[in-house]
Amino acid sequence: MKAKTRLLWMKLHAYLACFFLPITLVYIVTGTLYMFDIKGDVNKEYEYSVTLTDGWPETEALALPLVNRFLLDKSHKALPGDYYFENGNHDWYGFRQEVILIKPDAGDTAKLVVKEHDLLLQLLIVHKGFAGQFFKWFSVLFAASLSFSIISGVVITLQLPQLKTPALYSILAGGLMLIVGFFV
Image: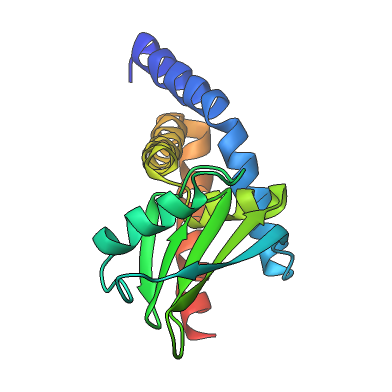
């Protein structure tokens, strides 16, 4: 590999590593804390009663205007973008808050729960990929950058004769550890 080409690879490797350092630290810290069952918490929780004048909304399209209309005069953040329909309930989930419209067992009064997340839980939700499209795309770019950084580091290392053999042994050891991990 020519010196100019190697220098280009090294610059790309370095600049991408610097750019993605903050999100890397978020993933490292939240992943480590999560392994020790430290997940953050709900900072504030609000519960409201919502009268269902037209019956239970079976779809998100029917539930969305009802929830938006009800929350319009409340001081909550915008309704999160990720939507789930679980156990018959409508659930909008984002890194800042979760909004759940709970189906009543009987009658025409549903429960609307708004859970505002603390900073640690917000960061964990970013880590888990439930923080909206911006963070999903940023995470995809981070994954591509991380792949490029690792591959470029290996390519650069394998081009240096004094590091080639130890690098190949390291690749082999890492592969063996992965295989052992699957069987243990």
